[in-house]
Amino acid sequence: MKVIDTAKNFLAIDEKYSSLDTAQIAIVSAPYEHTVSYGGGTNHAPKEIVKASAYVEFYDDEFNRELCFDVGIATIKPIKFNKKHGIEALDKIYCEVKELLEMGKFVVTLGGEHTISTAPIKAHYEKYPDMSILHFDAHSDLRDEYENTPYSHACFMARVAEFFPTERITQVGIRAQCREEAEFIREKNIKTYYASALRRLKHGANWQKNVVRTLGNQVYVTFDVDYFDPSIMPATGTPEPDGFLYSETLKVFREMALAGKQIIGFDVVELAPMDGLSHPNLTTARLVYKMLNFAFAGR
Image (tube, rainbow, N blue to C red; front, side, top):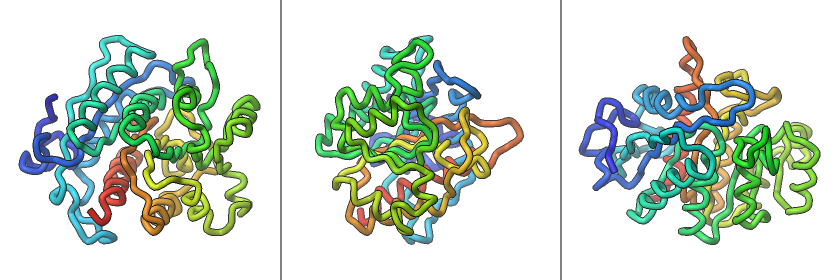
């Protein structure tokens, strides 16, 4: 498994800190796009996130550390799908993530459309059978089929629900779905925090703490950037109004840390880079590094 050269890897860090042999973290790039239903370009996201990361500062004042130098981050060369899609594409992602997990790496997967998340979730579930899933998204992605395929970005969580206990899934920020998805949520006891309910304080002023209470001790995070409000994240294929801001989102992770929850892996998906607009790419790159700091807090 080959890594990206120093000048083009995540954070643009030297080989001493980006070698796969020594790094504790591995970044997997899955530039897969086959079923986007509105705006496109998610296949360019991993490259642009990594490119933007060169402008993210190494030091995090909240943790008083430069994580990349403490634990090392290896950036794996992007997966080549060679026109494979659906289950064949997912198998390629699954095999790469599984191999890295077997090597003892903490794996971050960068999409691509949300379809890709089924693969790293499956690989992590095999290693961490007691894990919970924390799903940030504007959409519940629970359609059984969309536009004649069960492997649409709108169906990824329905595919996860076929092998993962649905009562261990928590969704945050949902504000666009069909009736069938809402019924599925109720039937399968998926813990869904709708944006409208959060805005009406239905889950309290500190809703972040209540979200964290639904999680087990080991948590896999799947983060669709359209969870954010379009004002800070316009570069996504299906933006939805009434989204969330960066600071209120980080409070979820702070509550996780206070509760002793362990982030065991995550993916970030659905960025669709826009020409001439760099801040969404940089925001996503910074989110990835911040989530890593939370994942390695105390380690």
